[in-house]
Structure formats: structure tokens, C-alpha cells
Amino acid sequence: MSPDTLANPYTIVDQVALITGAGGAIGGAVARVFARSGGAKVALADLAGNPRHHELAEQLRAEGFEALVERVVTELGPVDVLVNNAGIADNTPFWETAFEDWRRGLTVHLDGTYLLTRHVIESMRERGSGNIVTMSSIAAQQGALTGDAAYSAAKAGQQGFTKTLAQTLGPSGIRANCIAPGVVDTPLLHSVHDEESLGRILQRVPMRSLIDPENIATTALYLASPGSAHVTGQTIDVGGMVMR
Ligand SMILES: NC(=O)c1ccc[n+]([C@@H]2O[C@H](COP(=O)([O-])OP(=O)(O)OC[C@H]3O[C@@H](n4cnc5c(N)ncnc54)[C@H](O)[C@@H]3O)[C@@H](O)[C@H]2O)c1
Image 1: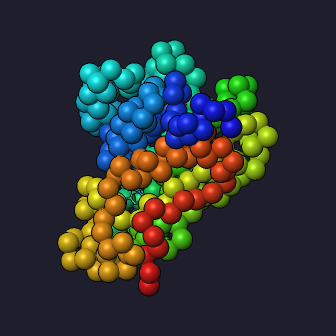
Image 2: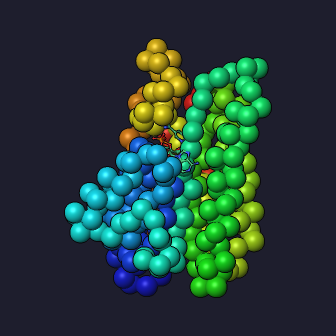
Image 3: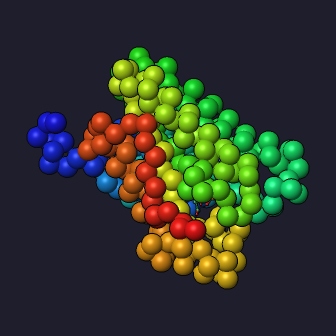
């Protein structure tokens, strides 16, 4: 490791990071943490109907960081770090889940992860470096407490996908890892659990509190930075297991 990297191993200076679902709680926190800790250039992707990533891009620009919502390669350069973070959640139990809702869960999390990764991977291979961080979930190992089976199946699929990327792309200098957040204090969490249900869940969480989105973002920064240079094919649980 070079002396510069050793002095500050957890920065991603001058790297172009593409973050999906950046209008959301965790994606927005990742963009802010990446931009503020060493000046990554961040490209924010979300659904066209969600304006919050535009507002975040304006805020980061006002702070002097490079941020944009589209036109990544032409304006910021090829993607160095891809954060597959876009997601949806549902609290319909499996026995009431329509096939189209099952498909939607798989499409957003699994197809989305495939498509974005496929989009950036050739350029990463040509340059001999790249980093893919995918936002999985503790639901992959534990099942979704909401009963959303498509969610847990897709989140487990992301982890298998990531292991294959790590094994096959490591020789090209590309790393791939997942984060498996537990219960993060976001609108998505509150949309599927009421206060009573959250109280019960927190009794099974070692730290007994909801996780700040920024704590997920700093884990993404760790995985994206040279300080984790030999960490690949892993899933980092943040929040501890929800003990049964
Ligand atoms: N909140 C939690 O407790 C929790 C726990 C474990 C994992 N996660 C995962 O973290 C990620 C972010 O979740 P969050 O809590 O910030 O939710 P959020 O709803 O705040 O953000 C998700 C964002 O993804 C966007 N999105 C949805 N479908 C999209 C698509 N097809 N293309 C582009 N953007 C799309 C939404 O518009 C939204 O802005 C998700 O993958 C979620 O499954 C969240």
C-alpha cells in the first residue's frame, strides 16, 4: 500500500461513483458520504418521477462537489464505483402475492443489479479496475419480516451474483461486495413496519436501535476505498443479526 493510501485508506478521490436509488434515504447518504470524504464525483440515478436525486445533486454542487443526474460517461468519465442500491419493499404476505408483484421484486433488485453492472463492466475490464457494491439485506439470510418473499429471494440472489462477479472479475482488478443492512431508520422501513412491530424487532437487535443511513453509507465507502483492497465476494452485515 502506498504511503498516501496508508495515510488515508478510506477515501475515493477522483473516482466516478454511480449510485442507483440515490433519491432515497440510503442512496442519498451514500452520495453525500462519497462526495464529502475525499471528493468522489457522484452520479445519481433514480426513477424519473422521483425528484429528490435532482435536489441532492444541486445541494452537492452548491457545496463544491461534482454531481450530476445523468450523462455519466460523457461528463464525469467512466464509472469506477457502481452502487446497486435501488430498491422497493412490500408487506404483502407470500400467499397473497400476485405473480406480477413477485416479478416486480425480482426485476427491480435482480434485473436492475444485472443491467447496471453489465453496463459498466466492459469499461472496468478494459481499465483493469472497478468496484461494485450492492445493497442486499439481512432478509437474504433471515427472511423478510414483512413476508415479502420476492424481496428476500432477490436479496439472496444479489449475494450469489456478487460472489460470481468477485471470483470471475478479480483477475481483472474488479471487486464486488454486498452490504446487508438490518433495520435502517428510513421511510422504506416505516412504510412496512408500524411502531409496535419495530419495537418488537428492536428487542432482537444487539444494539437495540435503528441504524442511521449514514452508517450504511460509511460501510459502502469502506468497500469502495483502497483500504479494503483485498475484500471481495463478501457480504457485510450492518446492524447485527435479528436474533430469533
Ligand atoms: N431501509 C432499510 O431498513 C433497509 C434494510 C435492508 C436493505 N435495504 C435496502 O437498501 C436500499 C435502499 O433502501 P432505502 O431504505 O434507502 O429506500 P428508499 O425507498 O428511501 O430508496 C429507494 C430508492 O430506489 C428508487 N428506485 C426504486 N426502484 C427503482 C428503479 N427501478 N430504478 C431506479 N431507482 C429506483 C426509489 O425511487 C427510491 O428513491 C434498497 O435496496 C433496500 O432494499 C434497506
